[in-house]
Image 1 (cartoon, rainbow, N blue to C red):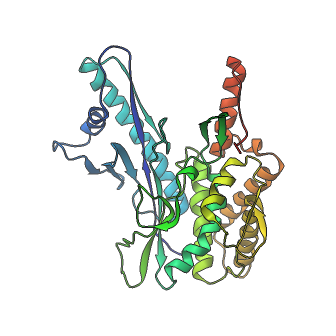
Image 2: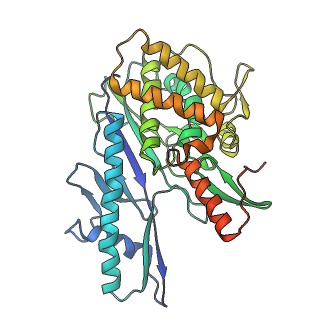
Image 3: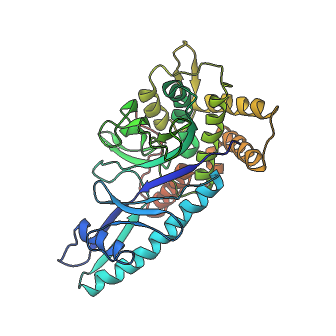
Length: 350
């Protein structure tokens, strides 16, 4: 695997559930969260001891950004460390809330949507070679990014006019464009923001904003690792098949609704593939790519896990309970429904 710098950013949701008459605005909750880390009033932006950055982002969302990492495994470790750091800050903030006379519970959510439909992001960053044309690279990446949600999706319950439905991805329904310069309004699969923080003539920052925030470190590792492999093949002009989707924005939504991972979406060349079939094509390309190249231990591990997850998705996705977020979440909802005798809807809406 080529030497590359990686980074992952997660915006978190926050909430205070009051047990009394006094409510606590989000702005105050955020200040309690940051109080343990900062000494300057109003300066909610800090670098942590592990090199990560913790700051207040748009919409009153605390954001944890990993430090620059040298491998998909490092990204996974630092991302999980961020969860532990926030858990510690939450305990401190809960104590401050009680000291101030507020009765209730604080909560932090590693998710991408709230109950009123707002969306906030999980952004991936990859140092990429500037030798490749950006839009060519993006077009090559998009079919992979649209279909990888079958093992990277975090799962989402949606309310519709016909009842409650479950989708694979939280982020998919908020995607409006293939490529754009904004991360808030007209959200895209790939963002054009280019901040390499390196030799600009040699490198660019690839900013992917389509992914879900993951609790499963297995999924985070696969998400970053498989994307890095695809990026390396693109940089080496190895991906010759044309997998360009006819309508990527529609396809990402259709795939998110299909819990079987088998519904086919049209390509520009007239062919049709399911998300599972396209991912198998990419995996086969990766095996062929590394058959003539030196393969590191981490690449072998990513390829093995990639193949295993696709096999289990084809056989029975429920085998991936506790590994893939959307499967784990769906199992939890089923168990809750059975325990409380509530009806559960596990198929996507049409």
